[in-house]
Length: 391
Image (cartoon, rainbow, N blue to C red; front, side, top):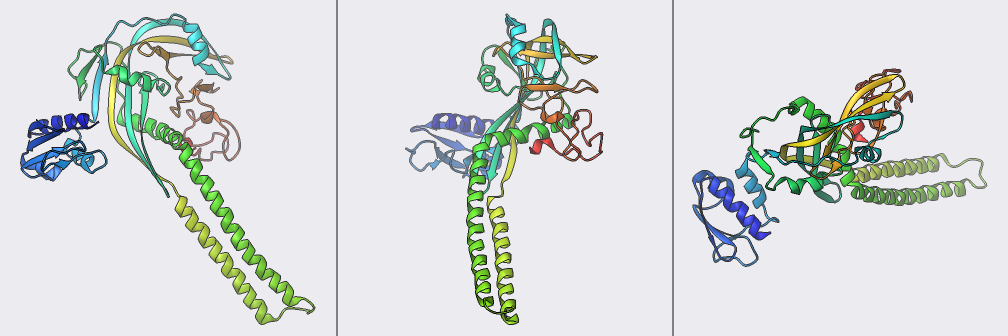
């Protein structure tokens, strides 16, 4: 890891105008221009070390220090987006019908495979860092991949695809997509609004899935502390009520002054209990932030499975892409939520292909409806649909 970090720092510093000389053990001498010195807080001539054994007079650079933030300041927006094209002569799927049988699950419609053709597509792959802060802190990195030809997601094969992209068959097209010949039939790169909608709907549930155990642990501890609070204040209230009953025993009614005193104590217990509950909720409140790190637009050949979809008397043609690099079928698109779960349903109105959540019942009237058809409100009671990404 120290060697990789030194190589990264050396490349970055040289591209930023610094003069770098590598020294042993695992260090470097850097002569930097003023703008680099300002960002990295370095003298004009500096020594940096990247392992436990440092060169004489060197500053230690490591992942646990603030050096990553300094390097990020020096990078700026460079390297945020990357365009690649994977070139090869892929082999077609041998049994597309069996692939569809296991990879395309419909609960209320049927489909027929019409043909399999070679095609090109564009994937957008984005890397995000998330930070979850409550009484504890969790951090992680998540990738989201979408086929821009049909909105299908890549969750189940993205981790296998990623390391295969940086091999001989893959070429760099630059940070703006230039530098390569134009391939016919490529889908258009999505615009900002379409991409923002896709991320708004797809990113929160994926982050929540990564944080599943952490959130479950928070809930267990909150419930445990809530039960302790409830038991403690319930016992205090029972004690006051018992005293009231004891004072009233044998008398027609309790002394008004004592009754007022007991009432004030009961009210005080209730106020303190409610205050403690609010403090407990604040203690276990979860704040999650996501930060875009890097994105890639990948152009590559696929095999396109053209399908005829049938629901009642309606028909619609769609396609799914089979990725030859990992030899897997993409997850069928949900035309509303971009979810990574595979089961799909087909709506009656426009034959939209959506997930079960995107065709669930209205929270107000209970009528199921397609969120792709009616994004803002229920068609029956006209109540707001709510945000499925919050589930």
